Amino acid sequence: MAALADGVLMIAGAVYIVFFADDFLGPFIGFLTTLGVPVAAWCGVMLADLLLRRRDYAEGDLFRPDGRYGDIPPGPLLLTLAATALGWGLVTNTAAGWLDWQGYLLGPLGLGGRTGDWAFANLGVLIALAIGFLGTLLPSSSRVRAQEGRA
Image (tube, rainbow, N blue to C red; front, side, top):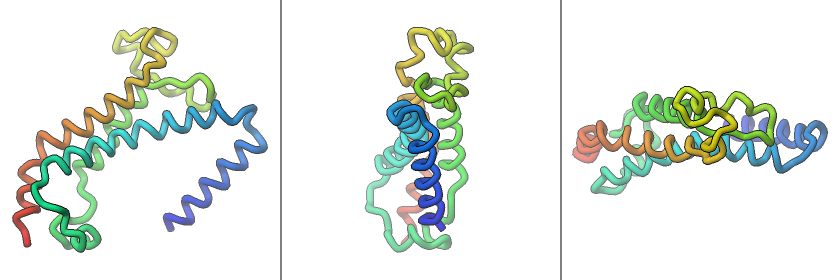
């Protein structure tokens, strides 16, 4: 299913770029910026989780919902989604018109809006990374210790 979803997205993206886009670079930069925010949030979660661990992951348990790590944990997933939402509010991209919705927090936070001094600093990527990292590091140490204690 993942390969099918990936294939559909790749074909749709290629069709858009080849037949509908005025240029390639603008949408590509917009895509990278937009994707960079959730990747940074996820990276922060993973880096904090790795920092908390004293042992390697039990590889077999990573693939079993009944293993020591459980199924999809709601905490890191919700944290990644929240960090992504905040991060997208702090990035802008004028090269791709379909991304005009980004940067919605730049004005309310006093950072000059979508055209101000901070508009193109891509603060959202850094903020998403920090939120993912700190949001995992602080509350997850007891969960990690419990996982490492199971055999």
